[in-house]
Image 1: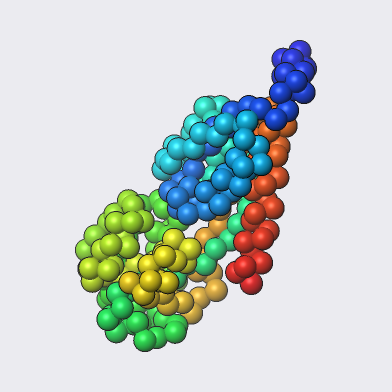
Image 2: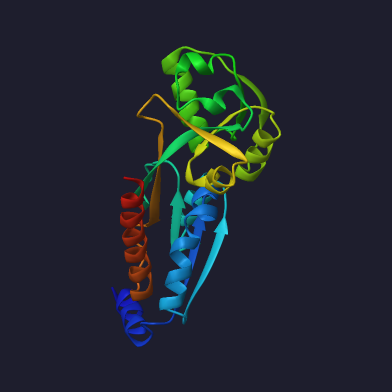
Length: 228
């Protein structure tokens, strides 16, 4: 109680100052977090933000050991030391090269994907889990010529016609708009991924951290409206 009181006093004295340490999995950190932390930095220029990209497992581990203030991950976890809050749901799509036979289609079925070459994310990632579950439910088989840990590498491999991939629509937005890649929906409503905010359950929520969490949820609400 004494430590919490001391932290509260310090927080009261430095309400618009501070340092927020953030860890994030790749997709959220690269493609979503900048849309939150840049406006936050403009609004609260005296609050310093440090953000690092790590695999989800390390984000969870480091958040549980109080090595950061907030973590962002791409699939739900149960951890006795952590508070886990869903913030966003995003659509997963198949991406192809522009001259791929699928490029003219609006929707793909499990039958379309039978035997196709998939550029896969690393095991344990959200898109990898989604496609593995889809394959299991559909009783189809696919070929995996490449397994890559980077979204950029996966998109590049698809551009070079090494195969197709399942990825968040937002992650491939730039390439789709510039017509370097095509995005096709899968005829399965479960082809979505969720993102979660996590923090230690005993973490002192300073005023600066409270403002950051509030901005995360405000942004997520606006982004959901864009998607609807």
